[in-house]
Length: 411
Image (tube, rainbow, N blue to C red):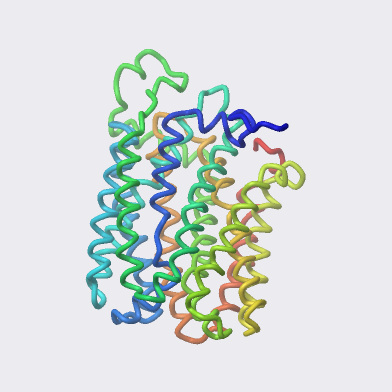
């Protein structure tokens, strides 16, 4: 009889590392929210149109842009865990404002706070994840660690989507309110993280006895970006692709409505998409061994682009669901691949600051793109699908420039 021991579990070696385990739980809770399938209805009832909704995404990016570098400099000096906890608190406050928001400005404030929360997490979580790996495992298991992190996000989203539309069909506001407790649990899980000492990475004696000075930290980050301009290209590519692909979490709702799908089925349909994303992530390592990172990134743009274009031209319920599933599932390959490529090229002493500097460069793309994406929605679903699909195809053309000749699983 086959017994399932802990060592037979996937990623058992990574889950045995205390900070990684609690970081994954905290991230899972952050992404366990119930309102994504009815957020359009919720915001329309509170006075927003599509242009205003995606302008909120630009304000969120602006919040990231303003807070990214300061929070990451503090993280490199005082520890990643403290800044992650600060982000969780900002997210809780922003959610409280979001619940009671009516009209443009309260939603704007909520999204700026959400941007600050993301800024506290965006570099710190990946930096903490990478720093928690023993140096002997970083090259061998780095990609797997970031894949596992993405799986935690996908699992949280899956559960939220599966339940969310049933709650949202009763009341969109109730779906938002019930998303508060998971945020509180994410704060408690983050509190349990034992951050590894900076001496995990090879350092000189003088480096381990003092935190880097502010000027030194920023100088190392700028020098890293200047020496490796492809890192900025990776950040620009990732931000542009994310803005375009993330639009499906708003536009799935009008596309499903056009296809005649009941609101109560929005959540199960999107949960199916997240389940397929989960499977795509589980197969990421084995597929990468055969076709390499460049082809994987290209497919993560090309396949969703075709699905967006087809979605613009169909109103069949089953076909619409399958096309949305395609967009969500294949887009999942980007984040772990890009994050590992960035982290392995950045020195430990300025990791969070460098990641945030790159995030600043990329977030400018999001600030510009999101109002355009929102304006597409106000011009109809055909224009939206064609516009997003063609834009993704153009974004995919950046891949040979930012990853020239990359094929090996560890490169």
